[in-house]
Every structure is written in C-alpha cells, then in structure tokens.
Image 1 (spheres, helix red, strand yellow):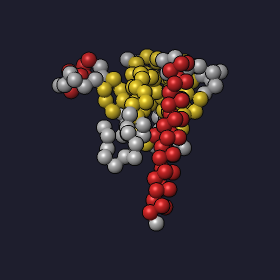
Image 2 (cartoon, rainbow, N blue to C red):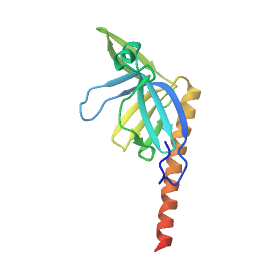
Image 3 (cartoon, rainbow, N blue to C red):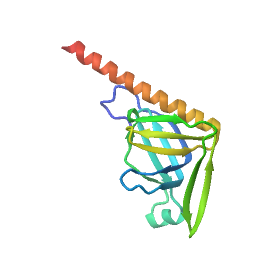
Image 4 (cartoon, rainbow, N blue to C red):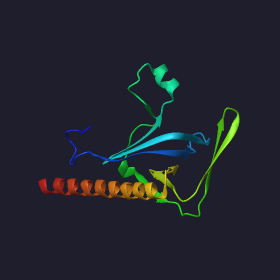
Length: 158
C-alpha cells in the first residue's frame, strides 16, 4: 500500500457502504451501484461493489468480497459537492424486470471527477455524509499542499 516514492504516508481516511448513481458522458446511460463501497486513502479513491454469494462462489475464492468497479482515482482530481438537504435524487434501476426507485435526500452528495463526470452518492446517514465531505476536502487540500512543498523543494535545488 505504501509506495516508496510518496512524500507522505498513505493511510485510510474512510471505508463505507453507499449507493452510487452516475451517467457517464461516453454512454449517456445511467449506471447504479446499489452495493457500492467507497475507500478514500490519503491520495487515492476507490469505488468497489460487494459481491453476491453467487459471485463469490463463481470467482472460486471466498476471501474476496468486492469487485473494483473503476480504476483508482487520484484524490486531487475529485471535488465533493454538498447537495442541499432539499435536493432529491431519484435512482431508477431495473431489478428482475421491475423498477427500484431510491429517493435520496439529506444524506446525498456529489463527487465531481476532473470536472467532467459526476457521481451521486447516497450515504448511510447525514453524519456519514458530513464525515465523507470533510475527508474528501482534507485529502484534496493535503495533496495540494504536498505538491506545493515538492515544487518548492525542486526550486530550492536549482
């Protein structure tokens, strides 16, 4: 987990179950991850999804319980946006031919990736949402500070 060339110690900021919805610009079709699990490290953001019992059996390894949904993202390219408590998201997800509608209110927020893609995130509670927002902002600031310090060190050499 700790790369030798990092100017900081990598650590886990949070690991939580959430529901995620996004509409990728490339497809324009909504993707819902009802069993998503987010990991925010000091510098990396991972979006995983919990496996079903059947998927674990099919994979042939009972020690893994999640899939990595997307490549790891640098936390410096993320912006957590607090949705107002009055904002409501509706996720529509086909489930065995029926529609599952999740209405999200005070514990929802957005994660913007490189100012291009947006993820709607439904936290377990308003308290979990606030903690995640704090940690995203702190990770972003910490990485910007590390980059600034590395740049100053570079200038001092020349």
